[in-house]
Image (tube, rainbow, N blue to C red; front, side, top):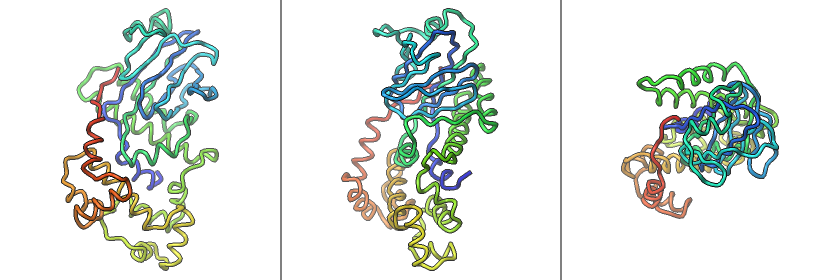
Length: 320
C-alpha cells in the first residue's frame, strides 16, 4: 500500500459503524439522508443506480464499491426514475416519504413487498472525523466508484457472514473489516487515471520525496529541518527542497507544520492528553509554542478546539 496513504489513514477508522443490509425487489428506491461524512455502498447481489443530490446517476453493479462523501443526501434505486419508497436518516432510522417512522422490518416490506429478494444492498455510514481524515475526504469526489475486484471480495464476504451472526466482538470485527474495505477501495481509486489523486499521494511514487513524506507522517516529533530530511533521502538540501515543493505543492517545512497541527488537533479531540504532552508528541518543545502555532493557523486556542470538538461528538451506534 502507498505509505503516505497508510500514514494518513492511521486515524481514519470505523468506530461503531452503522450497517444497513436491504433485500430489494423492483421497483425500489432508498434515499439516504443521514449527515455522516462518509458512506460505503456495495451490491452483494444485483445491480442499482446511485445518484447524489444534484448529480448524475452512476451504475452500481455487483461487487462494485462506492464511497460517497457526505453530508448531502443521495439515492440508490433500481432505476434513476424510481421515486424513493423510504428515507434512511441518522443512525439508520427509517421513514416513509412524508415523515412517518418505520422499523427495519417495515422498511424491508416497503422496499420489497416480500421477505426475500435477489437484489441485496449493503451500506455503511462511516463515522470518520478529524483533521487527518479531512485530508483524505477533501481529495475525493462526491462519489468515488471502484469496480469489483479480488481485494474487496474477501472483506465483503466476511462482512456479509458477520452480519448474520450475533457473536461477541461483532461490532469490533465489522469495524475492522470496513476499514479494510475502505482502504483497499481508496487505494484502487487513487491509482485510477481519472481520480486526480492528491499531490501527497502522487509524490510517494518518487523515492526521495516519498521517503520524506513517510518520515514526516510517522515521526512528526523528530526535530526535522530541510537539511535533515534531505540527508535521509541522500539528496542535497537545495535539490531536495525544490523537488519536494514541485511534487507536493508546498515547501517541506510548510507541509511538516500543517501535518503536526493536524495531528495535534486530532489528539486534542480524541484524547485527554495534556497540551504539553501533545506538543512533545507532534514536534513542539512545549505547550506554549504549540498553542501559538495552533492559534496562528486556525484562529482559535487549542482549548477552544478541544471544547468545540467534544460538544459535537455523537455516541457510537452499533450495526443494524
